[in-house]
Length: 450
Image (spheres, rainbow, N blue to C red):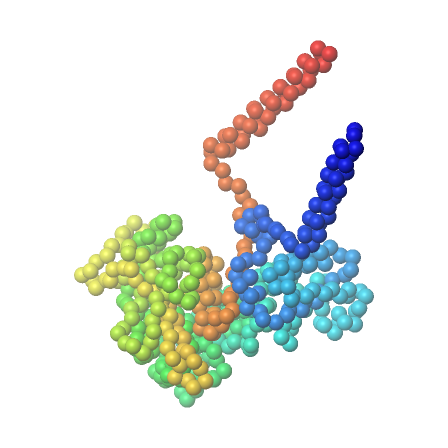
C-alpha cells in the first residue's frame, strides 16, 4: 500500500470519526421520536397538550418514592412526556425512608404519592395516570372551586345518587374536575345563593311549586347560568321558565330510524354522531346516545342567541303514540294527522346573552331534552360523559380549560377475516413445516455429497 492509499485510509477514518462525534453532539441538541404504539398510547393525548399550553406558570412535582425502587423510573417516564411539551415542569424525588419527617409533614400515605404545586396551590395524587394528572392540573388551574346546585325536592335526579336514573357517577367526575355538586331545595322566600355558578334542573318527576319556578325565572333575570334537562311530556309546571328562555318542548318522544346503523333496535334511543357547530361541539366526533328524548323548538325572540347542540337525522319525528317495547313486533311511522313533526329535530340548545348582572359579562344556559344520557345507566355509552363535561365547561365559563376524556385501554384483540385465518393456519401447519423439512433435506444432501 503506497503513501497515497495510506493517507486516503486515515483521512476517511478521521472524517468518519468526526462525523460520528458531530452526530453524537447534535443528538444532545436535537431529538426526534415517534410513537408506534396502538392509538399512540405511549404519547400524550392532544387535549392534554392543549391543557399544558394553557398553564402559564411552572409546575413543581414532588414524588415520595424509595431510592432503590422501579417506581421512580416509571414516574419519571410519565412526567417526561409532560416535560417535552412544558419544559418548566420540574420533578423531584424524596426518599420516605431517608426523610420520614418531611414525608409525615406532607401527609404521604403510600409510596410514589405525588405533591403537585402550581401558582401557590397544591394537591396530592396517589395514582399517577394521564387522566388523573390532567384532572389535578385542571383543578389547580381553576381560580376557585366551582359550585353547581342541583334542584331537589320534586323527584329530580340526584348528583350523588346510586340509582340507575341518578347522576352519581357524573357527580364524581365533576368532583374530580374541581366542581362541587350540591342539592338545592327551595321553599317560599328562599333565593338561590349568589356563590352558585350553575343551577341544574335534572328532570323533576312532580310538579315544581310556583314559588320555586318564579325564583328560577328571577334567577335567570339576575344573570345566573342554568342547565335544564327536561323529559318528554314532563313540563312539571316549568312553562314560565321555557317562556323566559324562548323555548318550547314539543309533544311526543323523538324517534329516529337511523339508529339501526348503530345496531340500535329501539327507535326512541337516538344516536347522534354529527353535531351543529358550536363552542361546545367544536371538534367533537364521538357518538352520543339519548334514550327517550324530547324535541325542542325555538320561539321567535331576540333576547337570547340560540345555538343548536344536538340534531337528529331526517329519518326522525316526534312520536305521540306508544313506543313498542323490546320484542314487540308493532311498528310505528310518522303520522302528520296526529300533529307529529318530522325531523331533523333539535334535542338541545345553548343560549347566551349579555348578562343582566353588573358583575358578569355573559350569561349562559343549556337546555337538553333528555337527562338519561348523564345517568348512571347510560353515562358510559359512547361520548355521553365527554359531551356532559363539555356542557359544564361551557356553563362554568372555563373556556380556556378543557376536560380530558378517559384514555381507555386499546383493543388488544386481533380481528381477522376467515380468509386471513386460513392463510395463517396454512402457513403454520403446512408452509413452515415444509420449509423446515426442505432445509433439513438440503443440509442432509450436502453432507452426503461431502
